[in-house]
Length: 277
Length: 276
Image (cartoon, rainbow over all chains, first blue to last red; front, side, top):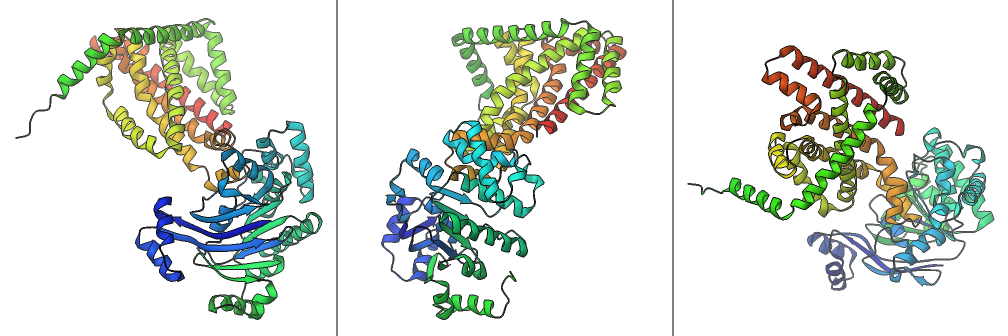
């Protein structure tokens, strides 16, 4: 469903210059990073490749600054890649013109944000209907579909509320409903539950699992929490300093941490020091 | 030591050139503004003063929604009538409303532009600083050259002086919208224009309304100055009182300006909060 190959992002440099620079660099990760920094740029993601099967929950894990959010945003070109390729459902998204890209974002991909990113001036129902409004659906139709999406996340009664009247967990349910309302094949989730209390986080993870059991969407889920990654992910990719450190199922990662960085995560989990969720 | 740069001569010749070559254009603007002002003034003097007072008090209550505004606004407006300054006040109000409307119509779109393009902002910002800090009397003279004596140069000078806060606070309001929220709209396939309409402008509205409030206050502060070039209204009252050393009349004119200022400030500020 999603194929990513050699994806790179250089911040703070012109694209042409960055591409030439990257082409001439040696393969050693540290050397590449240092070389880009010396030229005044920052290597946010470096040679990232992975593939996600249809219906799979693919978790991208890493600490802040590891490049996981950058990679996620390059999948729908909220951030333009510097080099590499992304194909979704067989279509090369870097070749798309503006209209094709908007259609991809509106119909194929839904997105959920860390701080919910709701439109505070609109009611919950109008928030959820936004993607359908952009699509040009008549008002009644899109509000009906919004109500259906709200019912899926257990907020059927709160359509007339404003986001400010809801709790954090409820707000992210709205964020999730907004992404589900457009019936996308792919869901991009950027640390969607990180801002929530542990108990609510657990609840939201269960909601996502229940929805996923029914609907089987392709999900790319970013988190910094290994417990969450293990609970949700059928495949996990661990990133550090813009590079992929390890990729595999949860069992594989627990059994054979690829390096000290991954081992530290696993050790933290074993001692119960993780996020307590 | 330092060579003399004849900025004064350049300015004069630039203005002469503009007057010679674009005279028709300025005449058209003057005529347009005169019509607009006249229309506004006619609307204001149409109802009986007491009826208009009642309407203005009702508007104040609708915006502020506190009972105390009714006696206070009524007392202020009646005081103006008791000082026999009602028509002058309405003339000034017409100037303020027209100048503010033009300033908002020019300023808000310009603010949207500067918020979206850093390059535009780089150019516009110093121009705004220039417009706002240049002493207002300096505008009056060329305005008289272009538009003749009367109320129009006053309106033009007032408008130029009042545009910057509309631009600045629109720009600020749009830039303050949470980047993640704009990203969310983008992620659902919205076009830049849709994002502006659906997300950025509604969320920037409180800031824009603060800008409108500032525009109106600046416009009002210019009204007295515009009296110097025959702007009429309360400005004329104050200017005349000053030249005749009539302290009492000058104070009355000033008091009427204060009443108008407080009325407009409270109403527009509350309106901004209500819309937000």
